Image (cartoon, rainbow, N blue to C red; front, side):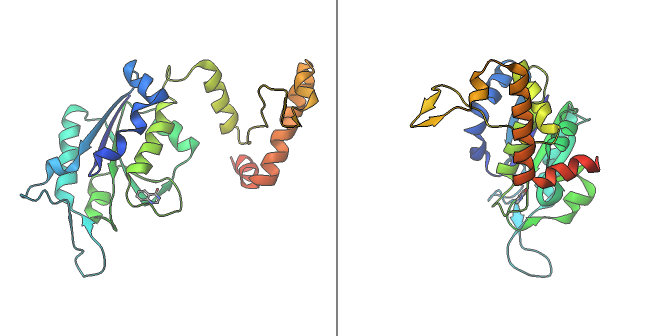
Length: 229
Ligand code: JBH
């Protein structure tokens, strides 16, 4: 799967994509991630990518021309690419949306900045608008990193088998049960007896009950979500 990212802050992508699972996925050629500086498509000598809003008001908007021309260039190589704008006004990102995007061969992610993006980018260029949650970020770069991480790990071969099974349990709607590793006693805190009992049926029952209880206490919305599906 290929990701093309359009941003005026390419430096923000350097660390996160070069560590751990995403790094290995790229080395194995399962995932290709290209980060493009939108300023490359700017026309004037100052490489301007934003401008003041018509009608007045605070803040700056991203100009349409550099974004349109960048996406058109990308589409020459990948005509089927799905173009996604990261914006607080988009539909809310979730595991379900990640699974949907993971079906694509090619994603182009456009990172919005400042107070927003010229409306013609939404109406005439992008296929989809996504928000990673209801809080204010300074720009879409971190949102794009979140989307790349969540989608790339769903590409076949990126995770080991143990991890992919785990993903299904989250999609199933509940929170994870408590987990422990050695030592069996740490600063007076003991691992629950059942986990060291060797009784696998009892362990499975305990985990299911803990997961149910934790979900009911902390995320009752997840229980309702499962019913709604
Ligand atoms: C995306 O998902 C977002 N939530 C909050 N702020 C944003 C800013 C730019 C892009 C988001």
